[in-house]
Structures are given as C-alpha cells and as structure tokens.
Image (cartoon, rainbow, N blue to C red; front, side, top):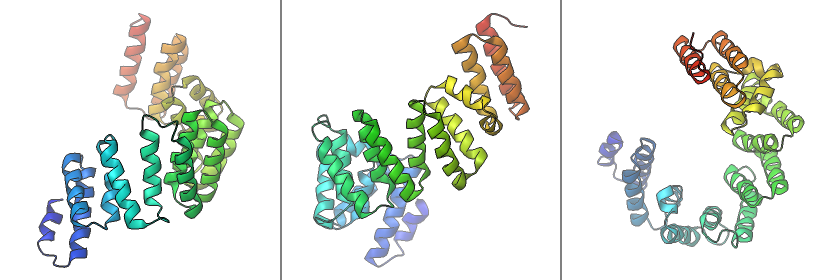
Length: 277
C-alpha cells in the first residue's frame, strides 16, 4: 500500500491515478485496515462521480451495509451511473433489501432484481448465491436447490457447489450429495471433493454425518488429520464412546497429525472420561 501511495505521485494521468488509488484501497482492506480502506474508497467515490468500482467495493463492506441510508445512497449512485439496464445496482439493491428489517416484505423485489442479473450474466456467481440464500432463509428449499443446481451447471463455481452440497446433506439426501460430488471431482479431484464433504458436515455441526462419510471408505481415505482429530473429540463428547474416540485419534496419528496435537486430544478426552493413564 505504501509503494502504491508513493507511485501516485509519479502518475500524471487521471485514469492511472484512479486505478492506483483503487488498488491501494483494496490492499488496505486485505491487510485488515478496514477504516483506512473505506476512507480511501470514499475519497475515490467523491472525486469520481461516475466511478462504479469504488461504490461497488464500498457496498461489500459490512460497516456500509449496516447503515441503510449510506448503502442506499451508493446504490442510487450506481443506478444513475449504469442506467436502467445496469447489473451492479440491481445486485446491491437486492442485498440492501435482504438485510433490511422488513426483508420479508421486500423478498419479491429482491428476487426480481436477482433474476434479472442471472439472466443477463449467467456466469456471475454472486446473484446465484444471494438468491439461493434468500430462498433458504425463507424456508423455500426447493427453489434454493433449483437455483444452486442451475447456477452450478452454468458456472461450475465450487462456492455454489458447496452451498448445494450443504443443502443436500442437511436434508440427509446422501445419494444426491454423492452424485454432486462426482461432478465436483472433475474440477477439484476425488480426494479433495470427499474431504470437502466431510469438512462441510463438521462445520455444520453434523459430526454423526461426518463419521458416516468417513466410514464409507472413499471419503475416509481423503480425510485429513485435522478432520480426524475433530471427530475423535466429537465422538467422545456426543456418544461417550471412549474406544471409538481413541480409534479416531489413532487414525489421525497415522494420517500424519502432529504428535503434540494427538497427545493434546488424547489428554482432553481422557480427562473428560476421568481416566488418565
């Protein structure tokens, strides 16, 4: 960010300065200095009334979205810049609608805006993820599934595939989930796809599902030491199955887990069981 700031002094053309300032703002945000990054983006938006990028980036910041009036002002700016056929303003207008207190009354508005974005740019994943998430939040899982399936087919984006996979797993539709994984394997490889399914189950609090997946064989081969250590802890915590927990620890050790991590896990489980040895 400092190098870009120094470079600004050497750039004379307006477009070049704007580009460098945007890059510096993005670097500040990536480094965790959100306040400085936001300030930099606000400066660009103020100086360049027709700049789309700075406004779109500002609308990605939680601090901006938390202030409905500020967020709406940037959306209005985008609409003025892009015109009636614009996609950015529609996408962000849907986001503003869905985080509002009256999101349920604005649900149809958001769906119309997002459908327009998807039809106009089928390769854009953002509107698909937002639309599918809105359907899930409303409890309309059939439309959420249809949205994710269509989006994944058109884009191949693994973020959409992950959403669909998690939805299928929550519904305990493991055959459908396995079919999806087979398609995902073409993009990321068999072991990575299987490990992805285990990780989603663990992150979703479904340790019993993760255990079942590991016992299927193919998924078990793909599990990393971290997942196996987590399963050891969860097996005892949820089932009070000391023998099973020790078995997962042994598998974690065989998979290459750090000895100190295995020892720490064993100590915690035995402590919980009251059986130090």
